Length: 90
Image 1 (tube, rainbow, N blue to C red):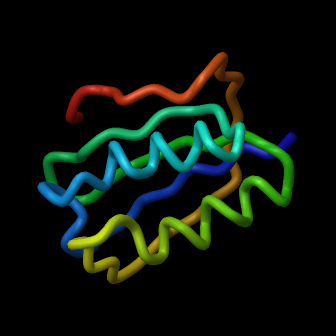
Image 2 (image 1 turned 60 degrees about the horizontal axis):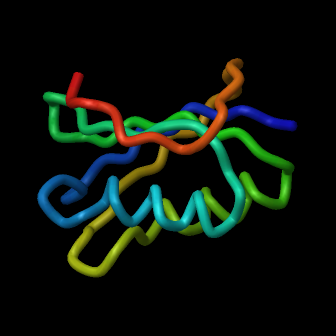
């Protein structure tokens, strides 16, 4: 099991990015959370197998229709999650 922290920048708020990421995570069986940040980025913690993490990273580079992703920062993290949640803006 791997855990990664993602910070996605670009036009990623107001386009359904969090909901799209949650749907993709649930489809792939990934656990964790996603939230908007006050600086306009989206932050996520994702946990899963290496293949699941790779698939989520690829999805994050494009996002849902309407998103314009400029950058996806990914770093190793820790945590255990029961499911995939939408968290409030931080």
